[in-house]
Length: 542
Image (cartoon, rainbow, N blue to C red):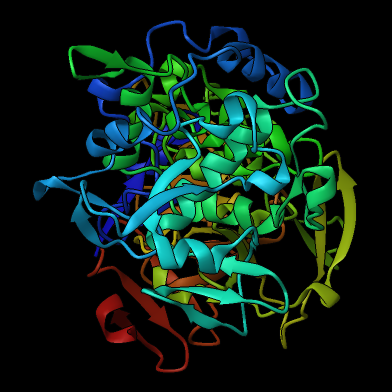
């Protein structure tokens, strides 16, 4: 595990000493983000008409781009095409089958053509019948087991014949393919639903959680959305998509379809079409925030990208609904206490779990001590919600402490992609609240930034409520009144003092007032300890 201390622009003056933003990186991010191989990328400008669109307008723009492909001969040319686009990379004479993953000779009679969008749901004639983007070679017996069933996640099932990793439930008329095929099947289905609307076929191809063959309504939409997110395109799927577009040479001719599956090029488009009007997902947010050229660059648009260089990774910008291209984030809607200290609040996205995001709140008495932060358990029934567009403010009742010592809260955002490594982002609003009113009155200031307080000694005050103190080093104050100051000494922990009592300090850990002897360096500072009636070193107090 490595810990990266990050310093956003608005906090960079002090973050080298006391970081408020921390990204904990547990290894490398799993390859769950679209990382296009340039050899299989769409031509420049292919999707330009879609820029800035979501929902139905985006779907219509996609349709216009992929409509009107070259029709490939179903009986003579599709098998030839399969021999290349579904070729087993370990055996050029073989092809890989859907549902089973078996490698069989391309010349074998054991496989046939699988219509992932069934013929009985409208793909029985016209260009849909031989559209290569939804046709795959499949074991003949497994193909028969699939029948015209819709796709779903199954709790009760029997294994498919000759494809035991895939499942079927005849009573529900549902099939669950093996994990390795779920993403490619989902994107093939989304392509068909976009390509074939009422302008192309009798009855619009549609997706639903309630499939009906007589109305060309296939499903189950919720499962297909999940599979697209959990199982992104691999190199094999991108290669297949690109070769269907550009063509393969066979028998002194080129077999090609001349259109692409946009959901293979950019799987984020699935959510941008189907869920953007209902909730904000990583996919729809990415399409809205970034150009297609930027979507091709994971270091810019991926979960760990940071295009505005404010040290807030994109997955946290998404979770907090801030602008990944604006480093200021002046209105960052983060954890805060209300005026009476009865609640603390944070902003979250409903349905965030579909984007592998979760939120948590942690509490500490000493925010400078990393191990002092502990999570606050809560369930949705504990929360008060207030809509904020497609996001929501969440209020969690404050849990009173046994004494008057202040508590600090911070927001935690976890990103845990399936099969990938965890990424966690913390935001401590107390530490991030730089630039507040100065607590102390200064009698002198110096060119190097040091100020002399008339009662608290020498400070660097530029990052209030954080101050860099000559003896206490970095301290965090919790009051704007000189008569009631709690602060965190990086060694002693919580201390209390005020204008009248300083340099007497109340040290919470000792439950005792100490007289601070100024001028000695930590950890050998000296104090007078009344309970001992003697001077003691700081190291003796700990």
